Image (cartoon, rainbow, N blue to C red; front, side, top):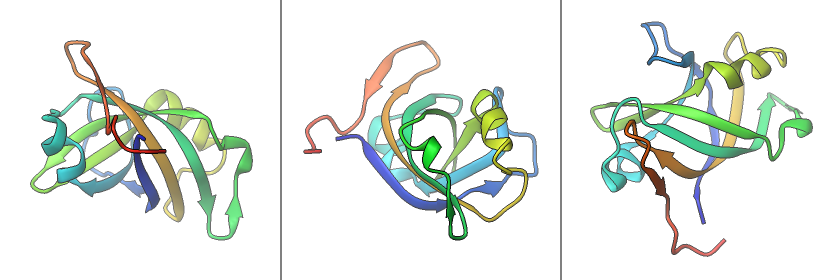
Length: 125
């Protein structure tokens, strides 16, 4: 079972985001990704959207859509930046300001050298 990240607020990053990333990200404790799998800044995370919503409005047409994040670790937090390519579609749903929440399942990481790292492969799904 991949890593499930539930109901995280999408925040806007004001400094310059990592290369290939939008200014929008979610954050989780680094023990789940960068520490557990020895991931580094700039590694990519591939997954699927489980839910994407603003307040009570849920965008069901995005359920199951592939999504890519770019990792940035700061202290004990991993910031998962929505890739520019994926943000361009989410922008059309209004993701240009705060107030959105996303749930995703992260299936694998791709290191900068191209090595694919499956995540949590022994967990039942």
